[in-house]
Length: 335
Image (tube, rainbow, N blue to C red; front, side, top):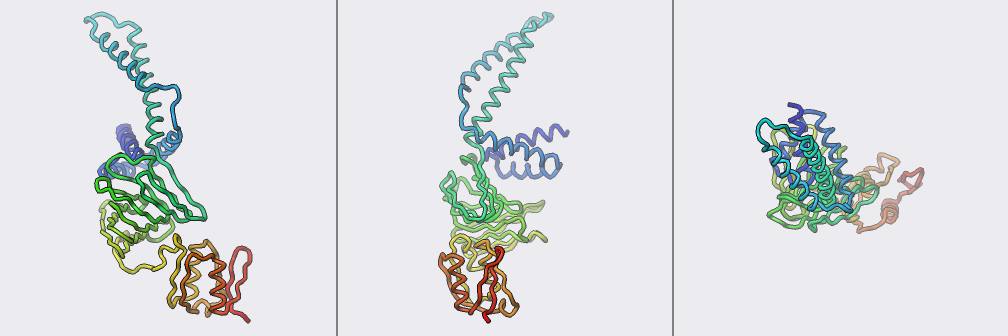
């Protein structure tokens, strides 16, 4: 039974890695993974192999069509030998011929796999301290926030355009009603036809957030009892990991895209809240020296300015002393 499970898993893995699996097959794969920890290990191994094969751009000196014709002729010869009259012994050449056929088949499948991987394999973009923009094979664009990763196919194939996100990204998806665009995260799947929206799905976060700018998005939580919500422009979908709840809200931080645009709107907000936003966007460590200063309130806007320029404005507005020490930025009241 275990062998059968693994064979089923390999078939599903192959379709999953090639981007050709449908929703039912993806669900079956999730059940297969949940059935045995060894299946997760097997998936990791195949994913690693697929990534390596995907880096092979060509197979020099291998004519797959010619090799296939040779294989067919040998198989036909083997079939003739099978029809020998009853009682006659099969020659040793029959067995060596069958072995040769099997060996050739293995070679052809191996090089076919390399060829297919070079066309249909996956790539991964992983950002560090700075966001990066990427154009996907279908023309959709993704801006990936810092310390995020996106796994996507070299070429979309099958009915669904599948990609995988770990972290945060802003998506502008090319419309293709016949081929839905699906973003897979650890906790939810996001399905769209053509729209723009932001997904915040960092592993360390307590929740996954999806905010729709244009179009319509379906968010489905994972689990034995899936739940789907439909988000329209101005909606935010929130999946809370601790209690596995998925809901819609219109309470949206107006600076949710500041990590991408570097544009901020602060309206009667505390200096502490402002500093937290700046820390997140600029990967800084702003420390406010006193509790009373944390509660100081400010109303202002910033449009694609450097952190130093923003700190200068805050310093002049609130009469602050700005000091940098050991990678920290310390804000305190002037004496």
